[in-house]
Amino acid sequence: MENASPHELFPHVRIVMGMIIGLGIARMLTGIAGFIQHPGRHRVSLLHMLWVGSILLELVLFWWWEFGLSRLPSWSFAVYLFLISYSIVLYLLSALLFPDNISEYEGYEDFFINRRRWFFGLMAASFVLDVFDTLIKGMERWSQLSGDYVVQVPIGLLLCLVACVFAQRSVQLSVAALHIAYQAYWVGRIVYTMQ
Picture 1 (spheres, rainbow, N blue to C red):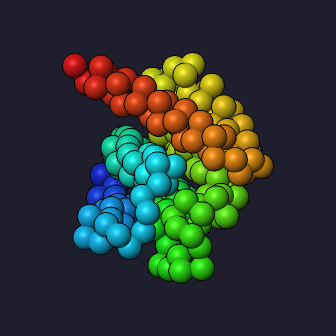
Picture 2: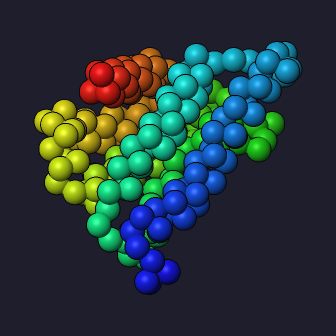
């Protein structure tokens, strides 16, 4: 691997990241399918479904943005470990939205509220990891993101802190809505820049 060119290493790294992200997407889709297959088993929660949609979109966006790694001039094992760790954090967010068993909770929303510190701790970690991911891709990538990105991370971290501290449903719904609105803005930017 040490003698491999960056273009030879990228597909290898992308496959491993893809397996982890694919597991996250599969977990989300299996959870959603469970609501369709057994509509009476668990009550559908707006808060839970907002985060399901948001994290599913986050996984898809992560996969899209990681194509920028194809232009890296060189690779190291540290960068590889970093990217795998980032993928694992995103997978864990999926696993917290659709845990293996919620029998001791009143439903998915109750589970989410009780595990919100883990969820928002991981989400905060993903904001920090994204800064390093962007820096790995180079200053050209950083400048493409403009000033929006410099604002996104501190606001995202602040919202994670607020959501960790306050369990009230109204606060949780507001944080979810703000996060989705910002994701929609980024998707709009992606579509606009591709034209």
